[in-house]
Length: 364
Image 1 (cartoon, rainbow, N blue to C red):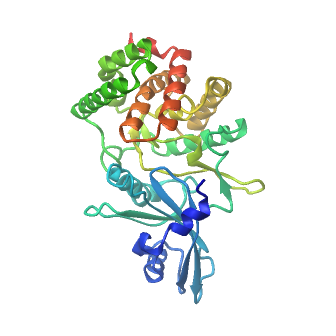
Image 2: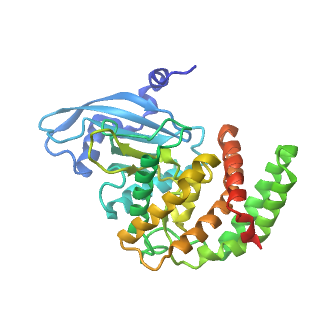
Image 3: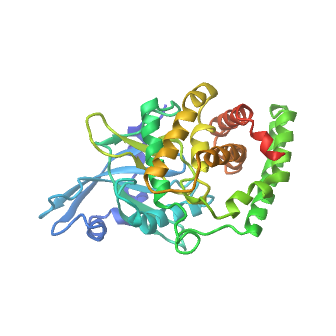
Protein backbone atom coordinates (compact mmCIF):
# COMPACT_ATOMS: atom_id res chain seq x y z
CA UNK A 1 0.00 0.00 0.00
CA UNK A 2 1.28 3.48 -0.88
CA UNK A 3 0.80 5.97 1.92
CA UNK A 4 0.26 9.72 1.40
CA UNK A 5 3.48 10.44 3.30
CA UNK A 6 5.39 8.16 0.94
CA UNK A 7 4.08 10.12 -2.02
CA UNK A 8 5.10 13.43 -0.44
CA UNK A 9 8.53 12.12 0.44
CA UNK A 10 9.10 11.04 -3.16
CA UNK A 11 8.12 14.49 -4.48
CA UNK A 12 11.58 16.03 -4.69
CA UNK A 13 12.04 19.80 -5.17
CA UNK A 14 13.03 19.57 -8.88
CA UNK A 15 9.53 18.26 -9.64
CA UNK A 16 7.96 21.44 -8.27
CA UNK A 17 7.58 24.41 -10.64
CA UNK A 18 9.81 27.45 -10.34
CA UNK A 19 6.97 29.52 -8.90
CA UNK A 20 7.49 27.89 -5.49
CA UNK A 21 10.94 29.45 -5.15
CA UNK A 22 10.65 32.07 -2.38
CA UNK A 23 11.37 35.10 -4.60
CA UNK A 24 8.92 34.05 -7.31
CA UNK A 25 6.29 33.04 -4.77
CA UNK A 26 6.67 36.43 -3.08
CA UNK A 27 6.00 38.14 -6.41
CA UNK A 28 3.00 35.89 -7.09
CA UNK A 29 1.43 36.61 -3.70
CA UNK A 30 1.99 40.34 -4.20
CA UNK A 31 0.16 40.14 -7.54
CA UNK A 32 -2.57 38.18 -5.80
CA UNK A 33 -3.03 40.99 -3.28
CA UNK A 34 -2.24 38.97 -0.15
CA UNK A 35 1.34 40.02 0.61
CA UNK A 36 2.48 43.59 1.15
CA UNK A 37 5.83 44.47 2.75
CA UNK A 38 7.08 41.04 3.78
CA UNK A 39 8.64 38.29 1.68
CA UNK A 40 8.47 34.50 1.58
CA UNK A 41 11.49 33.02 3.36
CA UNK A 42 10.75 29.28 3.28
CA UNK A 43 8.44 26.94 1.40
CA UNK A 44 7.70 23.44 2.67
CA UNK A 45 5.59 20.62 1.26
CA UNK A 46 3.03 19.79 3.95
CA UNK A 47 0.88 17.25 2.16
CA UNK A 48 0.02 15.89 -1.26
CA UNK A 49 -3.60 15.00 -1.93
CA UNK A 50 -4.36 12.03 -4.20
CA UNK A 51 -5.82 13.13 -7.52
CA UNK A 52 -6.43 11.43 -10.83
CA UNK A 53 -5.06 13.82 -13.44
CA UNK A 54 -3.19 16.44 -11.41
CA UNK A 55 -0.97 16.87 -8.39
CA UNK A 56 -2.52 18.89 -5.56
CA UNK A 57 0.07 19.93 -2.98
CA UNK A 58 -0.33 21.88 0.26
CA UNK A 59 2.60 24.22 0.80
CA UNK A 60 3.49 25.78 4.15
CA UNK A 61 4.98 29.30 4.00
CA UNK A 62 7.23 31.26 6.34
CA UNK A 63 7.88 34.96 5.89
CA UNK A 64 10.47 37.56 6.73
CA UNK A 65 9.30 41.08 7.51
CA UNK A 66 5.72 42.28 7.85
CA UNK A 67 3.32 39.58 6.63
CA UNK A 68 0.23 40.02 8.83
CA UNK A 69 -2.83 38.61 7.04
CA UNK A 70 -0.77 36.74 4.46
CA UNK A 71 -1.55 33.03 4.02
CA UNK A 72 0.54 30.58 6.02
CA UNK A 73 -0.24 27.89 3.48
CA UNK A 74 -1.40 27.68 -0.13
CA UNK A 75 -2.56 24.97 -2.49
CA UNK A 76 -0.37 24.31 -5.52
CA UNK A 77 -1.97 22.47 -8.41
CA UNK A 78 0.17 21.14 -11.27
CA UNK A 79 -0.34 18.49 -13.99
CA UNK A 80 0.13 14.79 -13.39
CA UNK A 81 2.83 13.78 -15.92
CA UNK A 82 0.85 10.65 -16.86
CA UNK A 83 -1.95 12.85 -18.25
CA UNK A 84 -0.05 16.06 -19.03
CA UNK A 85 -0.08 15.62 -22.81
CA UNK A 86 -3.41 13.86 -23.36
CA UNK A 87 -5.24 16.36 -21.12
CA UNK A 88 -3.20 19.47 -21.86
CA UNK A 89 -6.33 21.45 -22.65
CA UNK A 90 -7.65 20.70 -19.16
CA UNK A 91 -4.81 22.70 -17.64
CA UNK A 92 -5.38 25.52 -20.10
CA UNK A 93 -9.07 25.52 -19.22
CA UNK A 94 -8.59 25.61 -15.48
CA UNK A 95 -6.00 28.38 -15.55
CA UNK A 96 -8.32 30.40 -17.81
CA UNK A 97 -11.20 29.89 -15.39
CA UNK A 98 -9.33 31.08 -12.33
CA UNK A 99 -7.56 33.98 -14.01
CA UNK A 100 -10.35 35.29 -16.28
CA UNK A 101 -13.74 34.11 -15.02
CA UNK A 102 -13.38 33.75 -11.26
CA UNK A 103 -12.51 37.43 -10.66
CA UNK A 104 -15.89 38.38 -12.18
CA UNK A 105 -17.96 36.01 -10.03
CA UNK A 106 -19.68 36.63 -6.68
CA UNK A 107 -17.36 35.97 -3.76
CA UNK A 108 -17.20 32.77 -1.73
CA UNK A 109 -18.18 30.42 -4.56
CA UNK A 110 -14.69 29.22 -5.53
CA UNK A 111 -11.32 29.28 -3.73
CA UNK A 112 -9.38 32.48 -4.25
CA UNK A 113 -6.64 32.24 -6.87
CA UNK A 114 -3.35 33.97 -6.10
CA UNK A 115 -1.55 33.05 -9.31
CA UNK A 116 -2.02 30.93 -12.42
CA UNK A 117 -0.10 30.36 -15.63
CA UNK A 118 -0.28 28.07 -18.67
CA UNK A 119 2.68 27.81 -21.05
CA UNK A 120 1.50 27.15 -24.60
CA UNK A 121 4.90 25.85 -25.70
CA UNK A 122 5.73 23.39 -22.93
CA UNK A 123 2.09 22.86 -21.84
CA UNK A 124 3.27 23.21 -18.24
CA UNK A 125 0.86 24.99 -15.91
CA UNK A 126 0.28 25.80 -12.30
CA UNK A 127 -2.27 27.34 -9.97
CA UNK A 128 -1.71 28.83 -6.51
CA UNK A 129 -5.01 28.70 -4.64
CA UNK A 130 -6.44 29.64 -1.29
CA UNK A 131 -5.91 26.83 1.24
CA UNK A 132 -9.27 25.93 2.81
CA UNK A 133 -8.02 22.77 4.53
CA UNK A 134 -8.66 24.05 8.06
CA UNK A 135 -12.14 25.43 7.35
CA UNK A 136 -13.61 23.09 4.71
CA UNK A 137 -13.68 19.45 3.68
CA UNK A 138 -15.43 17.20 1.18
CA UNK A 139 -18.76 15.74 2.26
CA UNK A 140 -17.51 12.14 2.44
CA UNK A 141 -14.65 9.96 1.28
CA UNK A 142 -14.98 8.65 -2.27
CA UNK A 143 -17.15 6.81 -3.25
CA UNK A 144 -19.60 7.57 -0.40
CA UNK A 145 -22.44 9.96 -1.33
CA UNK A 146 -23.22 13.03 0.79
CA UNK A 147 -25.92 13.23 3.43
CA UNK A 148 -29.21 14.86 2.50
CA UNK A 149 -28.25 18.16 4.17
CA UNK A 150 -24.84 18.13 2.53
CA UNK A 151 -26.39 17.46 -0.88
CA UNK A 152 -28.80 20.35 -0.38
CA UNK A 153 -25.89 22.67 0.44
CA UNK A 154 -23.97 21.49 -2.62
CA UNK A 155 -26.89 22.01 -4.99
CA UNK A 156 -27.54 25.44 -3.47
CA UNK A 157 -23.95 26.44 -4.26
CA UNK A 158 -24.22 25.05 -7.78
CA UNK A 159 -27.42 27.01 -8.43
CA UNK A 160 -25.81 30.21 -7.15
CA UNK A 161 -22.87 29.71 -9.51
CA UNK A 162 -25.02 28.79 -12.51
CA UNK A 163 -27.27 31.80 -11.88
CA UNK A 164 -24.25 34.14 -11.95
CA UNK A 165 -23.56 33.17 -15.61
CA UNK A 166 -27.11 32.42 -16.74
CA UNK A 167 -27.61 33.67 -20.32
CA UNK A 168 -24.74 36.10 -19.72
CA UNK A 169 -24.20 38.53 -22.59
CA UNK A 170 -20.54 37.51 -22.83
CA UNK A 171 -21.17 33.80 -23.38
CA UNK A 172 -19.50 32.71 -26.59
CA UNK A 173 -17.84 36.12 -26.98
CA UNK A 174 -15.61 37.09 -24.07
CA UNK A 175 -16.57 34.03 -21.99
CA UNK A 176 -16.01 30.60 -23.50
CA UNK A 177 -16.90 29.59 -27.04
CA UNK A 178 -19.95 28.08 -28.69
CA UNK A 179 -19.57 24.82 -30.56
CA UNK A 180 -20.81 25.19 -34.11
CA UNK A 181 -22.99 22.66 -35.92
CA UNK A 182 -19.83 21.40 -37.63
CA UNK A 183 -18.09 21.14 -34.26
CA UNK A 184 -20.83 19.05 -32.71
CA UNK A 185 -21.10 16.85 -35.82
CA UNK A 186 -17.38 16.16 -35.53
CA UNK A 187 -17.80 15.45 -31.81
CA UNK A 188 -20.50 12.88 -32.53
CA UNK A 189 -18.36 11.24 -35.22
CA UNK A 190 -15.41 11.01 -32.81
CA UNK A 191 -17.62 9.58 -30.10
CA UNK A 192 -19.06 6.98 -32.49
CA UNK A 193 -15.53 5.77 -33.28
CA UNK A 194 -14.67 5.50 -29.59
CA UNK A 195 -17.94 3.70 -28.92
CA UNK A 196 -17.26 1.06 -31.58
CA UNK A 197 -13.93 0.19 -29.96
CA UNK A 198 -15.47 0.36 -26.48
CA UNK A 199 -18.24 -2.06 -27.47
CA UNK A 200 -15.74 -4.42 -29.07
CA UNK A 201 -13.71 -4.45 -25.88
CA UNK A 202 -16.70 -5.21 -23.65
CA UNK A 203 -18.11 -7.96 -25.85
CA UNK A 204 -21.00 -9.69 -24.11
CA UNK A 205 -20.52 -7.44 -21.04
CA UNK A 206 -22.44 -4.80 -22.99
CA UNK A 207 -25.93 -6.17 -23.59
CA UNK A 208 -27.75 -5.97 -26.90
CA UNK A 209 -30.31 -3.66 -25.30
CA UNK A 210 -27.58 -1.20 -24.36
CA UNK A 211 -25.94 -1.49 -27.75
CA UNK A 212 -29.28 -0.63 -29.33
CA UNK A 213 -29.58 2.41 -27.05
CA UNK A 214 -26.13 3.64 -28.03
CA UNK A 215 -26.85 3.20 -31.74
CA UNK A 216 -30.15 5.09 -31.43
CA UNK A 217 -28.43 7.79 -29.40
CA UNK A 218 -25.74 8.29 -32.05
CA UNK A 219 -28.40 8.45 -34.78
CA UNK A 220 -30.40 11.06 -32.85
CA UNK A 221 -27.51 13.02 -31.30
CA UNK A 222 -27.83 16.01 -33.63
CA UNK A 223 -31.50 16.28 -32.68
CA UNK A 224 -30.61 16.17 -28.99
CA UNK A 225 -28.06 18.94 -29.51
CA UNK A 226 -30.75 21.35 -30.73
CA UNK A 227 -31.31 22.27 -27.08
CA UNK A 228 -27.67 23.37 -26.79
CA UNK A 229 -27.73 25.18 -30.13
CA UNK A 230 -30.75 27.24 -29.00
CA UNK A 231 -28.28 29.31 -26.90
CA UNK A 232 -31.10 29.90 -24.43
CA UNK A 233 -31.20 29.08 -20.71
CA UNK A 234 -27.53 28.12 -20.68
CA UNK A 235 -24.68 28.89 -18.32
CA UNK A 236 -21.09 28.02 -17.50
CA UNK A 237 -21.24 24.35 -16.54
CA UNK A 238 -18.60 22.76 -14.35
CA UNK A 239 -18.32 19.61 -16.47
CA UNK A 240 -17.11 17.37 -13.62
CA UNK A 241 -19.60 18.21 -10.87
CA UNK A 242 -19.37 15.13 -8.69
CA UNK A 243 -19.85 15.92 -5.01
CA UNK A 244 -16.13 15.48 -4.20
CA UNK A 245 -15.46 18.67 -6.15
CA UNK A 246 -17.28 20.68 -3.49
CA UNK A 247 -15.78 21.81 -0.19
CA UNK A 248 -18.24 22.14 2.70
CA UNK A 249 -17.61 24.20 5.85
CA UNK A 250 -16.45 22.13 8.80
CA UNK A 251 -18.68 21.88 11.88
CA UNK A 252 -18.96 25.18 13.70
CA UNK A 253 -17.61 27.28 10.83
CA UNK A 254 -19.96 29.79 9.25
CA UNK A 255 -18.94 29.90 5.60
CA UNK A 256 -20.17 28.96 2.15
CA UNK A 257 -19.66 25.82 0.10
CA UNK A 258 -16.82 26.27 -2.38
CA UNK A 259 -16.55 24.60 -5.78
CA UNK A 260 -13.20 23.57 -7.27
CA UNK A 261 -11.57 21.65 -10.17
CA UNK A 262 -12.57 23.64 -13.25
CA UNK A 263 -10.65 21.85 -15.99
CA UNK A 264 -13.83 20.87 -17.88
CA UNK A 265 -15.89 24.08 -17.70
CA UNK A 266 -17.71 25.24 -20.79
CA UNK A 267 -20.96 26.80 -21.94
CA UNK A 268 -23.69 24.21 -21.59
CA UNK A 269 -27.20 23.38 -20.51
CA UNK A 270 -27.15 23.63 -16.69
CA UNK A 271 -28.59 20.20 -16.01
CA UNK A 272 -25.43 18.65 -17.45
CA UNK A 273 -23.90 19.17 -14.00
CA UNK A 274 -26.91 17.93 -12.05
CA UNK A 275 -27.19 14.75 -14.11
CA UNK A 276 -23.50 13.98 -13.71
CA UNK A 277 -23.73 14.53 -9.96
CA UNK A 278 -26.75 12.31 -9.39
CA UNK A 279 -27.42 9.95 -12.29
CA UNK A 280 -23.80 9.09 -13.05
CA UNK A 281 -22.49 8.99 -9.48
CA UNK A 282 -25.31 7.61 -7.32
CA UNK A 283 -26.91 4.17 -7.24
CA UNK A 284 -30.72 4.05 -7.64
CA UNK A 285 -31.80 4.00 -4.00
CA UNK A 286 -29.82 7.13 -3.11
CA UNK A 287 -30.65 8.93 -6.34
CA UNK A 288 -34.36 8.19 -6.07
CA UNK A 289 -34.46 9.46 -2.48
CA UNK A 290 -32.75 12.79 -3.26
CA UNK A 291 -33.32 13.52 -6.94
CA UNK A 292 -36.67 15.34 -6.74
CA UNK A 293 -35.92 17.32 -3.56
CA UNK A 294 -32.58 18.43 -4.99
CA UNK A 295 -34.07 19.47 -8.32
CA UNK A 296 -36.71 21.42 -6.41
CA UNK A 297 -34.04 23.17 -4.31
CA UNK A 298 -31.95 23.92 -7.39
CA UNK A 299 -34.88 25.55 -9.17
CA UNK A 300 -35.85 27.57 -6.08
CA UNK A 301 -32.28 28.87 -5.77
CA UNK A 302 -32.12 29.81 -9.46
CA UNK A 303 -35.25 31.91 -9.03
CA UNK A 304 -33.90 33.44 -5.80
CA UNK A 305 -30.74 34.55 -7.63
CA UNK A 306 -32.48 36.28 -10.50
CA UNK A 307 -33.13 33.62 -13.16
CA UNK A 308 -36.53 34.01 -14.81
CA UNK A 309 -38.51 32.27 -17.51
CA UNK A 310 -37.08 28.83 -16.76
CA UNK A 311 -39.94 26.69 -15.51
CA UNK A 312 -39.78 23.70 -13.23
CA UNK A 313 -41.08 21.59 -16.12
CA UNK A 314 -38.29 22.84 -18.39
CA UNK A 315 -35.77 21.81 -15.73
CA UNK A 316 -37.22 18.29 -15.68
CA UNK A 317 -37.03 18.02 -19.46
CA UNK A 318 -33.44 19.24 -19.50
CA UNK A 319 -32.49 16.90 -16.68
CA UNK A 320 -33.80 13.79 -18.43
CA UNK A 321 -32.08 14.84 -21.66
CA UNK A 322 -28.82 15.38 -19.76
CA UNK A 323 -29.08 11.98 -18.06
CA UNK A 324 -29.40 10.38 -21.48
CA UNK A 325 -26.45 12.38 -22.78
CA UNK A 326 -24.29 11.06 -19.95
CA UNK A 327 -24.25 7.54 -21.38
CA UNK A 328 -21.37 9.00 -23.39
CA UNK A 329 -19.31 9.76 -20.26
CA UNK A 330 -17.99 6.24 -19.56
CA UNK A 331 -16.91 5.91 -23.19
CA UNK A 332 -15.01 9.22 -23.13
CA UNK A 333 -13.40 8.23 -19.83
CA UNK A 334 -12.34 4.87 -21.23
CA UNK A 335 -10.89 6.60 -24.31
CA UNK A 336 -8.39 8.57 -22.19
CA UNK A 337 -7.40 5.59 -20.05
CA UNK A 338 -9.34 6.48 -16.92
CA UNK A 339 -9.37 3.26 -14.83
CA UNK A 340 -12.32 0.85 -15.15
CA UNK A 341 -13.15 1.27 -11.45
CA UNK A 342 -14.46 4.70 -12.46
CA UNK A 343 -15.98 4.28 -15.92
CA UNK A 344 -17.53 0.84 -15.34
CA UNK A 345 -19.44 2.00 -12.26
CA UNK A 346 -20.46 5.20 -14.04
CA UNK A 347 -21.78 3.09 -16.92
CA UNK A 348 -23.89 0.91 -14.65
CA UNK A 349 -25.30 3.81 -12.65
CA UNK A 350 -26.20 6.03 -15.58
CA UNK A 351 -27.84 3.16 -17.44
CA UNK A 352 -30.02 2.43 -14.42
CA UNK A 353 -30.98 6.12 -14.28
CA UNK A 354 -31.85 6.15 -18.00
CA UNK A 355 -34.17 3.19 -17.49
CA UNK A 356 -35.66 4.54 -14.27
CA UNK A 357 -36.43 7.97 -15.78
CA UNK A 358 -37.63 6.65 -19.14
CA UNK A 359 -34.99 8.70 -20.97
CA UNK A 360 -35.06 6.44 -24.03
CA UNK A 361 -38.47 7.94 -24.86
CA UNK A 362 -36.65 11.16 -25.80
CA UNK A 363 -35.18 9.36 -28.82
CA UNK A 364 -38.67 8.89 -30.25
